[in-house]
View (cartoon, rainbow over the protein chains, first blue to last red):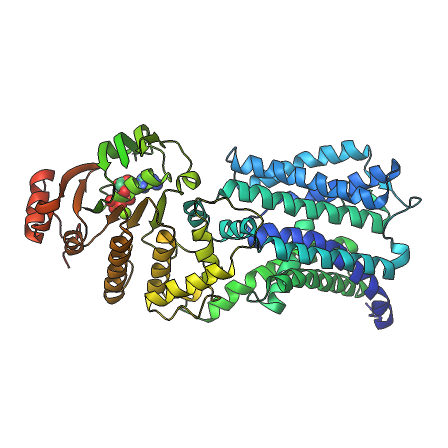
Length: 294
Length: 264
Ligand SMILES: Nc1ncnc2c1ncn2[C@@H]1O[C@H](COP(=O)(O)OP(=O)(O)O)[C@@H](O)[C@H]1O
Ligand SMILES: [Mg+2]
């Protein structure tokens, strides 16, 4: 195992681009996992749905920019199905996500008609071939997204969603329709996840049936790394930004361990360990202050 | 204003844990009634409040609000009539949200929520005034997270939230029971002040017989899911703790165990 610093530096721009593009997905996870307090596993395949929709529409002749809108919409549909399973049919939250995720595999196959669709010959908004340009476009999406979310979660409805995630019994008693709040939040979240999938498909030049596998873990890792660095008592806009920064750091770490000689196939194990450790930090910290229960 | 007609509620029906918690329960609550509700542990006090608020749906019977049937109306819709304070100070507020956000959420109970900003400058001003009346030093902490407040402070804020836009009915469920005695007295007095100033129709469950006698114009005692005592007006104002214990024993046909009701 030999570590080459120069080659690590050379990979940094790529990691930055990936971190920003996947950061949009992580922001979707932030909305469900942190704000709504809902572990949504739809993510792992709604990401691919976004990529698949984009790829097929682009190959069908649609402008790659416009195809992103449809990617977003396809994700909101996926999120709505999970939300309806949970709120109207009373299926437990995690299971609702798993069911939609499973169903989406078949749907994604139907959309793509094969396991992998190449976009290498097509015109795309961003591309691996021009990483700096991709970073700029990605950063543009990030800034707009942070502004929109900052505004939305400061509105009456947005504040209702936060109340639902924080204390749903109180929210109900204050006249907030918590089912509706969950539906809106899950639609937004999966819309962003699918948008991210569409952008990643364009960036890497293909959509693949497995492209979203493990996305939830990457999303959680980003959220947690962001929280560990910036804490929770910060302005909402910075909290969203911290998720992006968390995602960039995640990809820098991945690049580093790959350079250090780890196999690509070892990455999932590595990611799982990173998230497990990060999730355990609050419990470990609490263990130190014995007797304190908050 | 509120009528319960032959309401029944059974928990875990058809199992060994079957529990007929509320039995053929009928009561009429009039406008401006200020009712203290007492009864031993498990008598069904919280269950009745949950049935009224819509947190639970009765197995049979009807609940009417100003004559209209709300028996199956979802809790969040019914919330437009009802302000609530729970026993657990954690229950009534959103810990991770700041004080003004909590108040603004409560202020919008029963109103349409849209894409307007969650609070207006005018509201902020009025919240500051309301908080300063509490005299807990919270008026300068509008942007503190509720989770940082003490149990008593939280319960006082919850009380503000429950009464902020004059609910048609106020439900208090042993809302001072989890507080230390001094704070409990303070919150109780604050509740009384708000209820009488705003002339709120109130159902107040309490563990404390003295409070039950001291506050309100009507007293209802529950036992095993039924009303065993319902007195008001003159009769209630003459009531003493000893008499209350006697009447409880007589009507429920059993002895009152020490821990069932606190006499403190
Ligand atoms: N969600 C529930 N599931 C099962 N049993 C319940 C539930 N809520 C209350 N009970 C039972 O119903 C009875 C009345 O409870 P409750 O209304 O909480 O009593 P109180 O508030 O008067 O102490 C008790 O026997 C209690 O165990
Ligand atoms: Mg109770």
